[in-house]
Length: 254
Image (cartoon, one colour):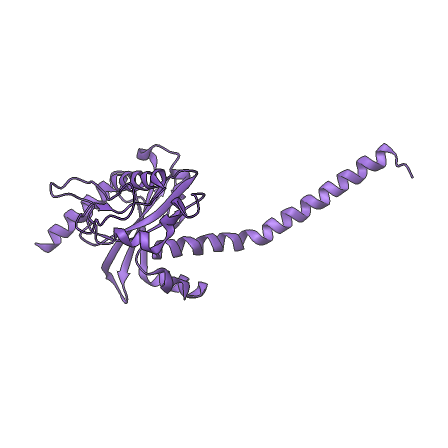
């Protein structure tokens, strides 16, 4: 039976409205769950710079949240290393700073979260300073967190992630064995210049005696360069804060 144009238009409008309401309702229902999942994943990545992935994987989401709350303090600084409590009249926290969105702004205008890993049961005893990283790999964004020891020079750990690097090649930056290469390396040279740590071209050489170099990823030179750029750039952005912490610790030691 042939339907009139009025019937077809009315049916289409009703169908569109119903589907729109269903999609909107689903989004409203799942939105909080998605935010919780993203927050939990971020906490796991932050903690991954200071504790092993196996330890994190053994935790329930509730245990991850409890461990994070008991061991991590956070603050936000600007490019000058000054703490920032609010911007444009709005309070800011480290967890609310979107590194990916900040990445599009000039470095001088960005906010920089700092996560401080305390000793268990002692909030005054700092074990590591964890700094976010963000950059570009071969195909898409790469990011991570680097943990510095309290000397603000020695790398205590690093966690790296990616959006679309090549499986088996650049995507290997997420492997624990690759990330462990950074542990114990130094970001300052003997002259006191910030040099970061560089992943080298090729793979299979021993860089254990070099404080600023780590073995590379075979077949993933561009991703390795992306990691190098990301690490050096962000350590540079945090340099004022790093220097301020080194100075305060030197004064406290007198």
